[in-house]
Length: 422
Image (cartoon, rainbow, N blue to C red; front, side, top):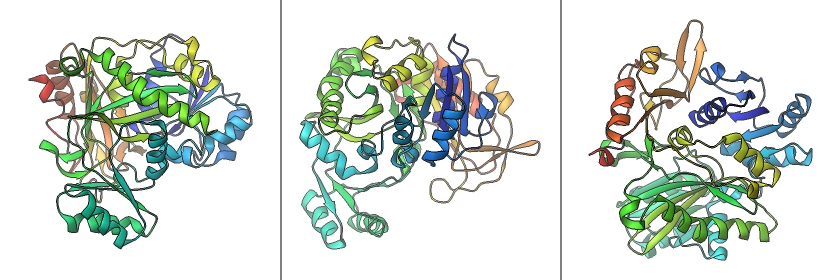
């Protein structure tokens, strides 16, 4: 199969590594890719946000499947252009991608589908923000309504900080003020063909920049999978997945289909387990990062079969995917200054030593080749993934490997999956 993967992050590298690990001899292309992806796929000089350019290339190169990794090409309508030309694509069209691109749209869909979520108010002005903050009370949750690369959210008990965050986004559009929900969070991915869904294995990520869930929100500093503690509360991971499938994923997919905007692609449900039950924090319209880096290495079913069946509308022909008993932990290496003002252009060394640690592989995010050196080009630079038979083993491997990486001023959390490894 000839597969084109759009994107340049660790999520896309993880997808490509999963495809590479299959028995089938795929020809894999990537645009724009990064230095690590270049070792596992042929890089194509292509703007992933240009629907015409992507479609023409896919047609001319006889691509069998296009996989859209990040959210921006989805909102740009790249999937729509591909489908109009009859090219199979894994990723929702522009209208369906509003499930991620507009928090207000997602809330309306959840309300129509009777999916449990927190109360929220849509605000266009400072006065509306102030009224919503007073109504919903502290801690305050303020979100940019549109795309913000995982950093448009603030959770704070300080009203002034919440108001300042809101004002920073009001110039570009509305914001959402949400009810604060308390409890452990879970990320659960669903592959959808617009009618049928297939769930992957749950994961938990770590959004705050610093140990102990301190510091600013980020795009994600680490993750682990599976979640053994679900057994105590739900009787097992399978029971939890079945519950979320029936109460969240299927109602949303059916509502989207009923409205003429079928969701074909990856439905990412960000969930919180409150005392009042499971509630949805948000939806994304693509694989999550860094959760993808710990979910896909445990997948034993062919990823290409799942994605191609969803793209062609025949997901009912594919059984529920299977996962290995292995544990997976990923730790993100970030540039100095991330997330506020990451310092870029610095050399990265020690990757060969890191990758040589047993059970470890590295998913590149913001890397590029500069002469004979590898340099950091963004905030989240690498995801170091450790696999093992226990979380103690997976964590030890991941941290032993990341300690080998040299990047001036870089930082990473030291407590990823610490709670499940005790």
